[in-house]
Length: 594
Image (spheres, rainbow, N blue to C red):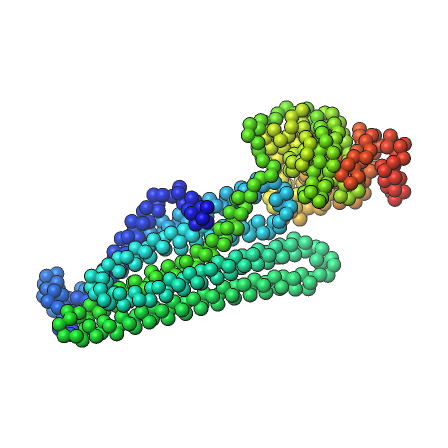
């Protein structure tokens, strides 16, 4: 579907405000067409320059009673002001309606775009930088407003003004009108020629601006590492390089705009000059009936004719730039969810916590197999650890349970139900998670703990914090549970952030618990304290945990060892040590370094 046609579906809910804007625009155009006439009556009906006209003198006599010339002139000048004021007020109202519709459409697109990004699976987000997605939501989405306000609204008003002005000019002098429009084919050519360049350069600008935002976001989000390694100058140079490329793209577009304005301006100046030459000769020609007042009115209408032509020219280029931004928005909206909600999916409730992997394989691309024919069963309440080297597929395996990804082959089931046959929302409601780096939002401690249960009471939030052994440090904060945690929890220590994440899991109280390296970023003393809290959290829950610190999971019910995407060992810690296999070697290395 054409980008413009697709964009207009965002304006359908605002049909009546648009109709109101159209009516007011027509009235504004009518008032604009009346503007030159008071001066014509001054020239031809009072000043009597170049002979004047009987019709003009009769009009002045009828409406102003043949009073003193100075008084009549003042009245006619007052009429000019009134017409201009009324036109301005009507134009103000029509602009308000059109701008409001454009902003409402922008709100609708931004919300839809952000919702699409929230719904798309992790595989989509893994493949692109978050700053690029943010740029599309914040900046590319503004193209929808441009398409409406500079597209529909401007094109409509310009075309109506063009037709109305042409009609009046034709009634006054067909030859002069045709002479004035001789430049039209050249203007159309200029519009088409420069429109292609504008769209290409606008797309390049948006891509480079997005890259610049990515560079700034990454440099600032990793500011501690930048300072730690003394790489401030390097980061500034990297930013300068991206900014320079953006500057070049912006310079190219601006030069194209300036060149196009020069071409169109010259064409219109030529058209104006031709009209003045022919019109002046008609005024001088005896018996032509074309007076100086007519020439002045015609000149005013010529400006009214060229103004919408010029607006249409710049609108065409603005629309091409907007089309580039809209295309980037629609790329996201058109992205297919590769973890779709199947038709007839049912809600899963009252989960006991039996998790089964049946011949599960997964790869991001056929050349990169991550899991290969993995199979195991975890009974309700059982605590199972997954160990193995980096890249063995542990985190991917955990991600298949809440359907962050779907297996390429095989089945993952919870309580006997294929997770692809249940709704994602109900499935994830049965799963609690604690990650290596607890993700916190820039809100309060209370809101972060209650993120998984927004309707939780204060008592429930406080109890979850107590179970996570977070109550003491929270109460010591200036505003307690209402204290802001800073961006990404920057005002809390790593251990405190982890306890907030554990409190969040306690509050959710889900029957299945996924733990992905929950203590790897902690020092030994903090790790030991956190593990005591985690053991309390795991009690009575089906638990899948990933960790490199084998001492923390050696006593769990089962340990599954992964190597190159397959399970090579399965048993309790002591059993696996006794076998003398992969786990035994890893465990001996751990104990020798402890």
